Amino acid sequence: MTTAMQNATEEIRGGKMKVVDLTHPIDEHSPYWPEKVPGTPFRASTVATYQQDGCFTRNLVIPEHFGTHMDAPAHFDPKGDTIAQISAEKFLGPAVIIDVSGAAKSDADYRVRASDVQNWIELHGRIPLGALVLIRTGWEERWPSQARYMNTDSAGVMHFPGPLGGSSALPARPYPSGRNRNRHGQH
Ligand SMILES: [Zn+2]
Image (cartoon, rainbow, N blue to C red):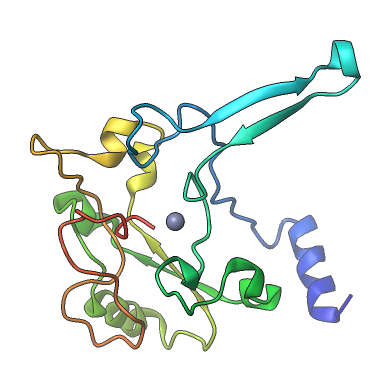
């Protein structure tokens, strides 16, 4: 183990470095993207029990974009990397949190803007090269309510905040614009 990793491990164990778990447990009550078949797409069937088999196991069926998950570039780009093609090193690094929860509270369709990133930089300095950029929308407070999470209006259009949209000077490729009518907005 490298010294840096050793130090990090010791700091975590000693309580100096805080580990933040951003995941949610998933089950049939978790919010889901509406598909053709109504109701939750989460399926869990028991295949072994303590009583009969000495252990507990289930088979799970979920869409790959269910709950807390990672989208690979291949999700939008036919030539993009799949998850398996992304090296594990890329998942470690400094992280910054751009908090747009205030804006998303008054505008459910809020899209992160270049100015949000600029504001962060003005407050905290440059974003390190290769940093992980987390966007906080505040939408986690709605979990696990399907109705509040999807926020569907009377016309059947869902409203929730999303990544980069509008005019953006950011080097990252923006997500398709629109009022969250497409399935790209939430990931
Ligand atoms: Zn996804």
